[in-house]
Image 1 (cartoon, rainbow, N blue to C red):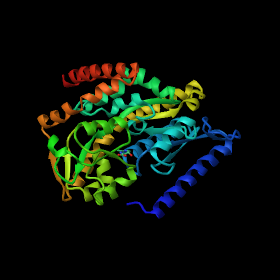
Image 2: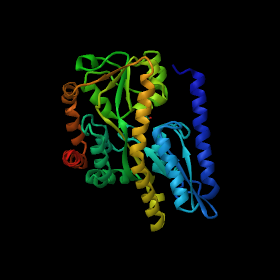
Image 3: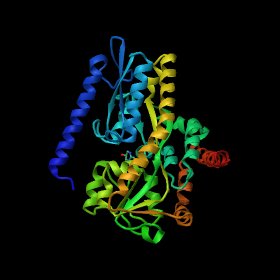
Length: 359
Ligand code: 6CS
């Protein structure tokens, strides 16, 4: 559990990070407010790029690849500073900093933006996406629902979303086997804070609790929670396998996220720079699919060396959980006209992609 000393240290780190960001801004701004044009030193523009994971995790590899490619392709005009999780506050703080322009770029996940941009909860509906990652990759890359009405919702909140992408299937880890709705009853399941995720687990009979990612390990260890959901690479790098007995290949969901910019910053760039950034995001996105796959494979190999039982749910078992969560689709559609359009369109797109990729 977190002690007062830990809270004090975390608080201190957060205040320090805010001061650092503010100092960075004041070097070049002179306007005293949140900037949105990057810090420029002569001909070099320094961009702050924050993400939600630790060093060496999928988002960190993505952000560093972006840094490498953009710095090279812009001939040094852009310099990118990558900030890992926690260095600029919580994931909710990062989202807010992206909105205000205190940072220019971020990887921000719907699990954290769902209550700010309710339509982004489309990504949090379990059993919506395919159990074929190639199908999901195609949908995330090309979807009219995502790059039309959903993108508009991000823009209304001051964010330009470039690309939605995936970090692998979500797996359950738990201190008991979970393969039937009966097994799920009353399980204290840790989730990200989005309301829709919490509702979905309530429908499954669990007792969901949202906590900050930094608290998951200790809460599992002290039995404050029984289970959690995350992609394999994250289970492994966070050492959840040390404090859990079962790993369920449930394919109940994919972990999706979005690479985005502060809108004022992006729209303030000239056309050539906008195109360059979009080109680099697309290149890194294409690269990230195999990268996340390799990370998942390495993690599974590592986890299997430990004392943890791996359970693969059958199609029928997965179907039973899916049935229990269908109501959240209605809740999502009731959110707004845009939400209704997004869900109805993406359901069709997933079906079409299943046919195309399957053939
Ligand atoms: O479960 C979480 O909170 C985290 N999971 C991942 C894969 N990325 C960031 C997030 O903090």
